[in-house]
Length: 202
Ligand SMILES: C[S@@+](CC[C@H](N)C(=O)[O-])C[C@H]1O[C@@H](n2cnc3c(N)ncnc32)[C@H](O)[C@@H]1O
Image 1 (cartoon, protein in one colour):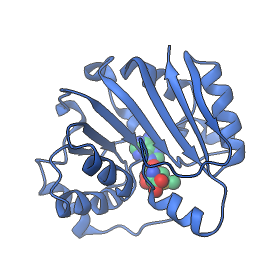
Image 2 (cartoon, rainbow, N blue to C red; image 1 turned 90 degrees about the vertical axis):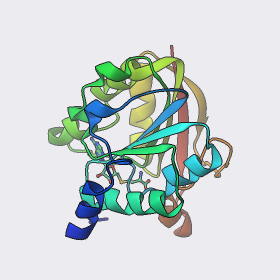
Image 3 (tube, protein in one colour; image 1 turned 135 degrees about the vertical axis):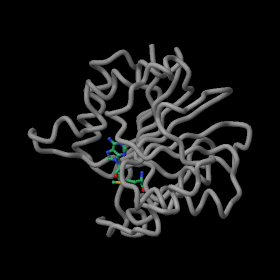
């Protein structure tokens, strides 16, 4: 789903320095979860509302898309969300080393072509970054509509220092540690099967 560049959304990000922070200015205190590829923010804002004592950080490289997420954070007056307009791969993870409780990866772009391998958020390179920032016993929560990506993910987690906790090939939304995303909503309306895996850092 392509989103047309919006100057007003980008300006909104610039004016919200209390919520939109530079990657180097991230301060981690207390229980913290990251969402990578936050999109328009339905997931992160629902979770932040439900768990007000937990901190949520959303990484999104597309500024216009992140503008939509920011509007939701502001409308709900959430104080436990920070948004980062950056490519997760360009982010130097040192400051977050072993500080994060969990990472949410919701409907990442599959990038099936070999030439786009470096962009995949499910690769040995990405998982090694996840491993670095997660606490021991930290979790990665992964959802996708894409069957081949799910197979690839299971193999990639198995080849990294993660063990599977739950693997669900036909996931029905549970609202305990989860919420519906914008992509998920569209897929569910069309009857597309959703897959979900939870993996633990060992
Ligand atoms: C397919 S969309 C899914 C959005 C949302 N998670 C959902 O489920 O509705 C993937 C999102 O991830 C973002 N993204 C992809 N690679 C990224 C990266 N390396 N760092 C930050 N964001 C990324 C894209 O800009 C896009 O908004």
